[in-house]
Image (tube, rainbow, N blue to C red):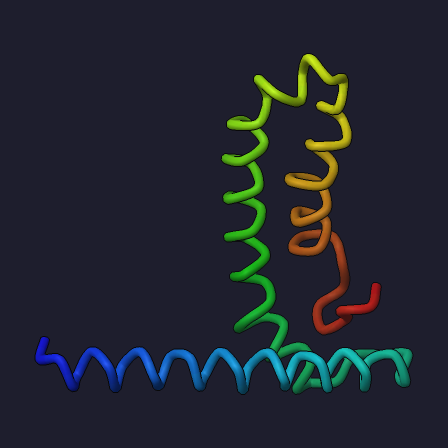
Length: 102
């Protein structure tokens, strides 16, 4: 890739990330006002949050395993497992589609 193409690609990716995170904040505030999820919320959840949750669960699992030599002697294995593996997995697989405040 040429230098300007890489710069353009990086700029577009950063702009998309910023726009996406701003939209999720507004979506989260809207969800708190409603009891049931909207179609838009379900689509955003399915397309963005669930894949990110799967990645977070996988990365958390890797970091949990890597942290075992440090968390085992300190007695914090259960806390590390909960924070790094269980919470991302629950967010990804156990909450209703479109509900980010669940």
